Image 1 (tube, helix red, strand yellow):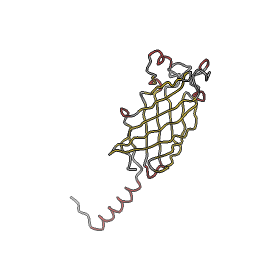
Image 2 (tube, one colour):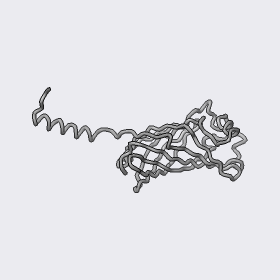
Image 3 (tube, helix red, strand yellow):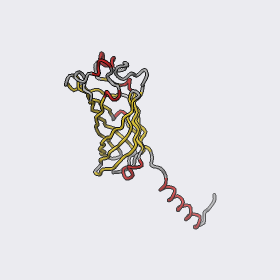
Image 4 (cartoon, helix red, strand yellow):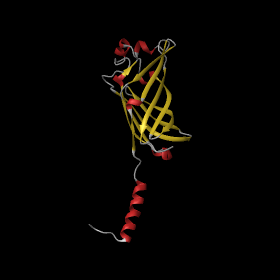
Length: 192
C-alpha cells in the first residue's frame, strides 16, 4: 500500500476537479418501449394516422449547454404502419417509402437552442428516400424523477421527399403536408 503526502493528495484532487469538469456530456438513452413517432396525413381531407415501430437515437444533451448538443435519429422505414394490413403492404413500395432502396430515414441536428421553461428549438437535416431537407423542430421537455420526456411536432412536405410518387403525387387525393409528432422517453438527462 502506498501513501500520499498531503501535497500529492492536493494535486490529485485539483487534477480530478479540472478533468472532471472538462469531461464531455454523457449520452442519454432512448427508451423505445415508452417512445413513439407518429405521422398524420390527409387522404381526401380525412386525417390518416400512422406510426413507425422501430427507431433509434444517439443523443448527447445537457439542458444548460443546449448549443453543444448532438441529436441523431434513425428510423426503420419498413416499420411504418397505418394499422391496416392492405395499406401497410403498399408503404414499402417504390411509390411510397421504397424500403428496398431506402431502408432508413435519418435526422441529424445542426443546432439546438434553449428557449426557456423546458422548451428548445432543434434545427437539423432530415433525410428520407434519398432527399434531405432542413427542418426546425420545437421540443418541450418535462421531467419526473430520473425520466425525461421530449415531445414535439413539425410538418414536412411529402413530395419534397418523393413520398407518394407518380399517381399519388395528386395532392387532392393525399395532401402534401404531413404532420410528424413524437414523444421520446429518455434517461440520463440533467435537471432542467
